[in-house]
Amino acid sequence: MSEVVRARGLDDADADARLAAIVDSSFDAIIGKDLNSVITNWNAAAERLFGYSAEEAIGRSVLMLIPERLHGEEDDIIARIRRGESVPPFETIRRRKDGRDIFVSLTISPIRSRAGQIIGASKIARDISEARASQRRIKLLLREVNHRVKNQFAVILSMIRETAKHTKDPKEFERSIRERITALASSHDLLVTSDWSGGSLHELLHQQLQPFGQDGQITLHGPEMTLRPAAVQALGMAFHELATNSAKYGAFGHHGAVSISWSLSGEPVEPIFQLDWEETAGSIVETAPAGHKARGFGSVVLLRVAPQTLNGSARYERSGGVLRWSLSAPAASVTGEDGNDTTESADLS
Image (cartoon, rainbow, N blue to C red):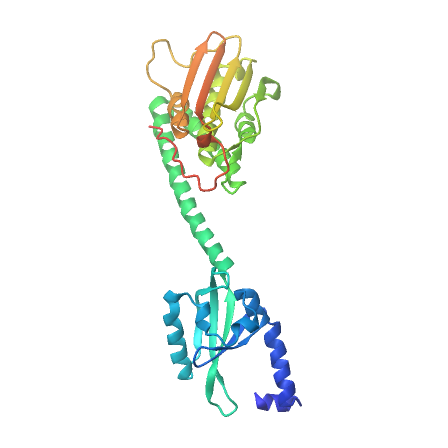
């Protein structure tokens, strides 16, 4: 360094002052220590990172920054410094004055006297806690995406299997599958826009019903409500089946009206979510011949998939010109923003 200093016309005092200014203004914590691990230098960034002032830190062992289980790291570092080796950058954990552990990236190099003798080490520490937290969030997200994709595949495969059971015409099968997968994708889009934290019940109804009914045919009654991810998917499927049935045989296809209402009721400690779909038309046409015992795919969704997914129960009734579908479930299974929702949809088969 002395060669560079003289080339620039700086004496030793000026060089030391400039170096001190650079160290003190660094955004990284820079710490000096002797070969006994005693702190000799402590810049402002070290104070911000670890919480100790220079007066509190200088003269104390650097072990005060190292969790006891990691004290062996310091022994290895000092041994390498004594041999004149630089320590490659590595990530580890250090402890703040307030007792909180933080992730840091460390770079450590020997300090030599003017005579070339090793007298200590300089350590540059950078806080990487936020970066590590981001990495953890990414890993969790990837696992969650994997879980969601597998769940979607299972739903689609069940959808194909069940639709095939009740549809003999290939063209009708293709149309039904395409529409059901499109409805499922629409619910998925609603979740994606909220980072899978949930979805608005109003928005879900709008998405699923928009292709079927006119605005004048649909009436919604209920408070703004955020559904859990599993509820978005289960109710999205149910609304699609109800709307498809209505377009073929009920209110949407016969100039009738659909009223959908929902509420939270019951005891404050364990409220109940109640949803009622009611449609009226001149006549509600039966979807199967009289005496036909087989359940269609829509019935499976409405009477088993949706209520089982939400830990509730459902009823489906047709009488004259009125069709009703009612769903009751614990509010905790239906509402609330929860990005870690892991509820599985009930098997469609």
